[in-house]
Length: 548
Image 1: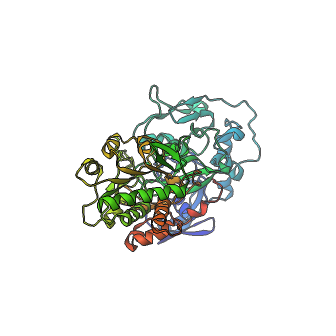
Image 2: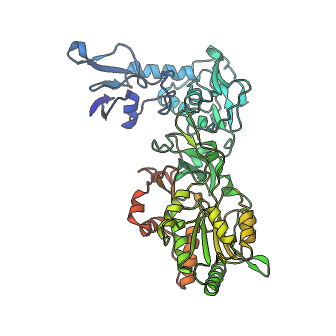
């Protein structure tokens, strides 16, 4: 293991790394704008320059000072180096760079959405001058809509070129370029080519200043009021690691959470903007039951009692094997386990099935290796895995096609079903409704649709952002997530509903859902396979969000 010294602190590293990478890994701050770990190194912003003394192989490896400042983002670290970012020469460069960047920068921090997480703001205080020597009029640049999600405030840009490199190296779509020279230089999209690739929102994340802003978040909330919770993509099969930024029970934005093994530094736009259904006005918010053909609102105790009694009547009359449970791939592994356990208690010969799996097109892989998944559900594999654990025989768990055939077969013996939804858009389920006929149906769902209208007993469920659990992504990686916001009034998580139904069946007090306890019940092998948020992620849960 090699070591270098940065401002008197000994830092260790392994393998080929730059000085800045070693500093960041050892929690030593070196100011930087243009460097990003997911992009190529251009060393253009120059604020990371430092004085470096390195062993000279031509002079018996004596540590000698390099006569000029070197960019720490580009210069390789070598064993025995001494780096000084707080020497008079390095400090003078930092102040000069900050003065240059602020010459034409507008003084609009109070109305800028980036305020509170802006590197220019922070570095101006830490490394800049206390007052400006520039008295001339500032050059104004236009504000533009450059795509469906991103707005460009060109006069705030510091020309770090992160967005240009992102569109070139990560997505390969090349929408953004650098135009003009000198003080007229600016970034912009090419004529007739808006920033409209499936990863476009990431340019907002990597912009170190307020030049590129999210139109969906614009003027919506001050970032210092937001809390953030580590979570997992609940929209697609990618399993991307995300931060859910929220305040007072409302989600304001979704940001990528770095995980080199899954999504790197990026998320797709459908994940970033896919949580809007959580706060839809038409969310199902109260249990309902059919009475004389009409759906009426009831309390939770009555709804659970009616569901259990209705299912028990069918099983008692029609015998074992007359009940079918369909678990949506939008639900967590823990919810699938509890629902299947309850269904087996109702009918030991219950038929188990994985519900509708939404597919949209084909997987799309970008030059960086990031893949947008065509499978628009987070946990098909996890639900399949858990149901197979509880199935009587291998291969017994049905897919949607087999399930529809089984329900629609008059000789199939199915007379009662437990159906779950939780999709991000209303699931009409026309084929399923037709197959149901007059069978007794208990439906757990979040949004109204044909299936919820058909339910004999309707139990409103919770979205993934309102509960804890684990998902298995398209690559077979099982990851846990936490509840970010409180439950919408009147709803319960599907796991809690399963526990309430079990309590109604057994005439015992209901227990509260505990994701870790359920994982232990599923089995040590499953619990050991779950990847939890990295240490420190949970600690941010109750803290106001600040820029990292």
